Length: 487
Image 1 (cartoon, rainbow, N blue to C red):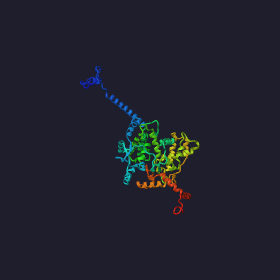
Image 2: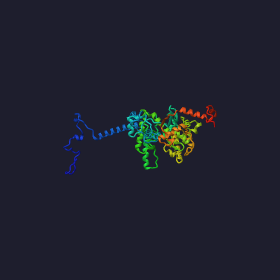
Image 3: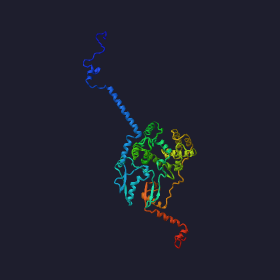
Image 4: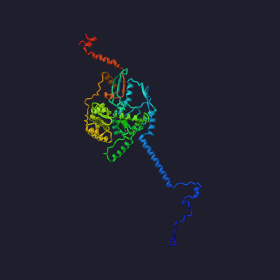
């Protein structure tokens, strides 16, 4: 096609420039392909393949992470048991060349572990000697050095024990005073309720290897709430802690709180290692965590009693309820018998109140916060019914119950210890040796004391002296006469 103007000529299709090969436009010649020459994909196709490969790898990684986060099957349950497998300790004669002691934590302070360095030094200055002391394994030493809490099976109940020279108990105190001795002793309704409030997968048998220190759903919700609080200070935020990390917090963290993210990581790492002390399968360890939580949850303090730890002690101290009777009333499977509906509803309201009060026990169990606690209990009762944990008739019965506001002081307590004179004298001597001021602190130590006393002989002497209150016994003993017991 040509234009009418001869100066400018346009051709269609345009001619190829003389310096370019036709193969640049139309592709390789058939002869080149037949000759076996390599043909490279065009850049768009190459990019598409890379995108598809990256997407596939990302999907596989996401699935792996989700499965691992939920089940702990591939990594955590295989690596962590190996790490704790070499952690341990054993007592050996003489002082340990390198011994480590905790420096803070309510549990460690109450049981006396943080005071051990000072007490050992003071007792050695008074003539006592270390006959046996623990040696830590190198792996346990390294773990403690990097900031992890010591990993071992911790006591859920402890207290002062005084023995005579034969090993016969002279005095014994145990705190908490009432505990669940094994997991099966806990009413299933209490376990289900605690799991719903604090840790939904706590004792899920379908996840036998689960790491109980991390609940990703709860942690994610906590992060969302924290972000919302930045824009709405009045927004309430839930915590991301599981039962396992809460145990680490109120046992070993300074003042039982989590002030920094570093401390949170310390709790998670410690709880993760402790959960795998028994191997890769953690169901029994998680049941023990539930039992330990219920036996040791801090529930403020009450004048006339002192610090309250554990659900069963809390029931007695705060609501004057018999823990054994509460456990019996809540031992039903589907719903309580009709004739004990009101009693079971009252018992359940008491238990639920203490489980919810744990978040701010001093406030919720005081005069100002008890009405707020009561309203929260009502909210949870309705939600628990919606989730099918309790049925509607039992829900209505619990809502109909009301608890009296606990007084600030426990006027009379049946728990007061009245020790014999012998035990009193030994305990007084211990106060002086350890530099303590009150029997309250002494009796809560994880301490066993062997005395030189022969307790059966002591009791026989005391019983014989009491018999001399009877004039007939005095005459029979030939103690009545001049300059004897005649008056």
